[in-house]
Image 1: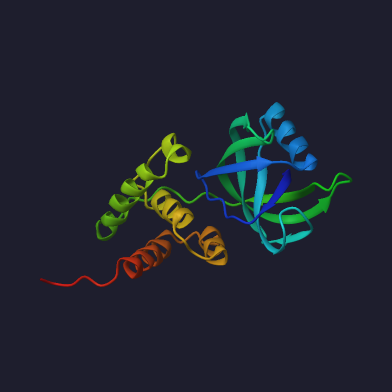
Image 2: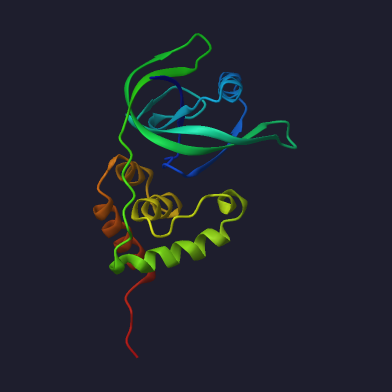
Length: 195
């Protein structure tokens, strides 16, 4: 499968929202092509470099499909995309206009997994947080009983280093992600003091 690539300083997870403001002509052309043909583009985390210049990326990313667009008051194109299936980059090349394209192998989606009882509190925390995150998360289908979906949403919104988010994206071990997310939240909440 060959797709256009969008290197970014963010990690996109399956079913997660991605707001973008597009100003480079190569990406305006890419977005236009994807919208006309209803095709996805690939989002990869930048390993070295910058979004507006040369960059090297990690090899595992996520397909993104455009679900909304608008023209901002500053004249820039605004786009909202939703994460799809994960992929592994096999080869890439740069076109004359500077757009990177890649041949990718799709990674098998993790099957839905019932949220274990020990982790029910994660679902409740996520439900409270999503309600406070505004418009970007309003229209997301919510699956609070699915451990895969819960860990993806918590990982994308928690203030974690991008390299760690990338590790979570590359992992297909839902139970390990559940445990690590629970530990992260426990550290944020601090120890419980008995009264």
